[in-house]
Amino acid sequence: MQELGIERYDRCLMTTDGSPPSFYKDGLMDKLIKIAIDNGVQPIDAYMMASYNPAVYYQLDHKLGMIAPGRIAHLNIIKDESQPTPISVIAKGQWVLKDQKPLISF
Image 1 (cartoon, rainbow, N blue to C red):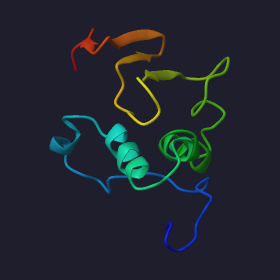
Image 2 (image 1 turned 90 degrees about the vertical axis):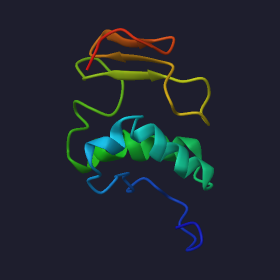
Image 3 (image 1 turned 60 degrees about the vertical axis):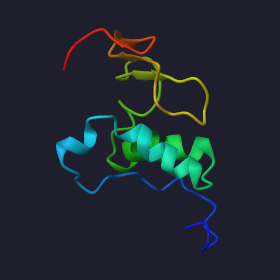
Image 4 (image 1 turned 60 degrees about the horizontal axis):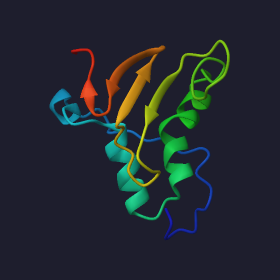
């Protein structure tokens, strides 16, 4: 996309095209975000392609895709923007991963 001169990613989404569950074992969206960043996509654009942009596309942005009152919030806490694998995660107000230690089992 960059070779084509595309500079805006606000209508781009990330997907694995339906990979099997074994692909998800070590994470999913963080891996896709990392691939985008490693290939020159600005971190903010990569994170938006994995969160807010899909919410807008599926017309769920009134409930998903950002932090605000009345919305469903899942927060991934990361070391820095170039390392998207979360060190802690809060989902629907509950810690599910804290300091890289799972607090619930899936």
